[in-house]
Structures are given as structure tokens and as C-alpha cells.
Length: 341
Image (cartoon, rainbow, N blue to C red; front, top):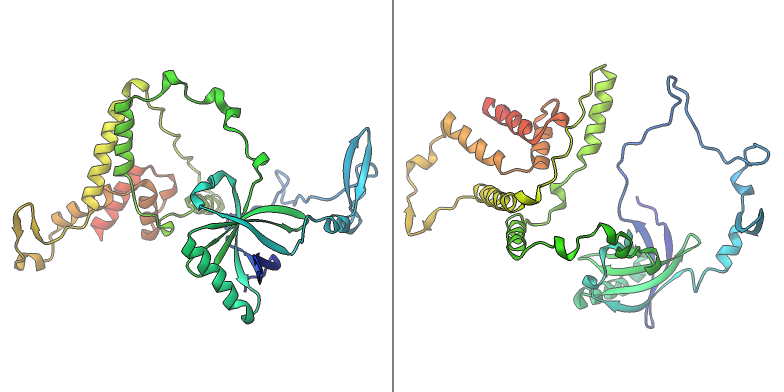
């Protein structure tokens, strides 16, 4: 059962609903212990007094604001709680905006907001439904763990979601990297932009988060297993070379053609009338395809997949050494696997 990280109330005008926040994501990264090279000795971090070299207990540590010259203003943790801005247990809606108005760079962490107690479910659902129908995001500030946050509260189909956000002065101005950005002389031409837009359209897909997975985590596990068996580890090939400006238009056109071809081959075939022809449903449809037909169909199916898709299929098929394979190698390995099957 998930445990709340904060509890308080959400207010909308004179409407108040007690809520609790729960983290909406979890870390699945593989974690390593730190060891001294050549040994199995663990390395641990300790809080040590810089002057005496002695370890200090957490309860004996306070915060100090550096005034310079070795002088500090000492602040106790309890004092920070006392000066928390506003009511630290209240998320008060300041106003509502369209989600599209908020640049993604402002978003930080995401939390699920749940009502505290069965008696508060109706008021909670009222707030969720109102936000969903208005298609708006509530902007508010609140304090958690001695820190004030700017937040965006929005509705999903069955739950309220709170996004903590960066303050305006925490978001760097793009002008900080202006010397790296394109100038007017290096802007793309109309034809190049049009072809690039066609490529975007050809590669447009439906958003399905289950289609993606952390392949790096799996490769780390394979690395650990390989080293345990005493096998050599082959590194991944480097990234492809940058596109030459002189070859840009040709690369765009070939990319569009390839994307359209893959999308066309992956589109399910349908019976009935197409282009004036009538596709007859005869007894041949029920025949089991021969080996040559199966091979051709496998080639078509696999050729339309990205490297990530091929890697996922290779994982499901249990193909060894897949983490070291290029897209072409994954394609050949899967082709061999399915043909043999």
C-alpha cells in the first residue's frame, strides 16, 4: 500500500477537501554499491565534523547561512517550519489556465492527489469533474518538507494529479545558449522545411507508453551476468555521423520514403473493394501459407519496426547477445528465429 508524502487540504473558493499526496512514479534504476577498487570493501558516506574529523549524528546537525569570513547565521529545522509561507497544509487555487500555456520545462515531479477518508470523496470528485470538464489546470503554491512549491493541479479520468513546478527564476533563458543556436543565414529553406514536415507526418504515431521500455536497464543486467560468467563485453557502436548540409535534402527525401514504406507495410490489409477491384474470398485464404510466404511476411513485419521495437521482440524471443546488436543484426536474428520456428 502506498504511503502519503504529504497531507493537507485543497481549497477552491469556500470549498475545502482534505487530501493526501502520493508519488506517481517509482525508480527502477539498477543501483550499485560503491567498492574500493581491487577489494570488496564497501565505501560509505558519513557526516563528519570538518575541524575534528569526528562523525556527527543527524540530530546534532543544524543549518547555517554563510555570511562570509567564517561567520554563519544558525537556523534550527523547527524555525524553518514556523516561517513556512502561508498555511503549510493548504493548496489554495490562485487561478486556472490552459495546460497548453505551460511550457514543459516548468514541470518537475508528479503526485497523485487522493481524498482523505470516505466522507471527502464527493467533494473531491466534484473538484475533479469540474477541472476535467473545464479542461483547465489549477495553479497554486504550497509548502512541503520546509520548501515552498509552485504547482499545477489537473484532472485525469479518475484522479487528481499535482505537478510541482520550477519557479520562473529557476528556468534558464534560451539566450544563455544563443551562440549555439541557428542564425538567419543558417535557417532551413522552404522546401527543406516542407520535406521535414512530411517526415514528421509520416512518422506520426499514437501515444502508447507501454510501447517503450528501459533497454539500458536490461543491458546493465546482461553486462552483470556476462561479467559473472567471465565473458568479454562488447561495447555498443557509436552514433551515426552528422548529416552533411549538402546531403540534407536527399537524406530528408529518403527518410520520408522509408517512413511511408514502413507505415504502408505495417498497415493491416482489409478485404472488400479497393481501387475499383473486388478482392474475392476463396478457399485459398484458408490455406496455410507455405514457407516462402511465411518468410516474406516475416520480412515485411520486421522491416517496419524501429530498433527499440526489434529489441523488445528479441527480448521476448530470448535471443542471446541482443544488447550488443545493431538494428540490422537484430533484424537478421529475429528473421532467423521466426523462420526456424
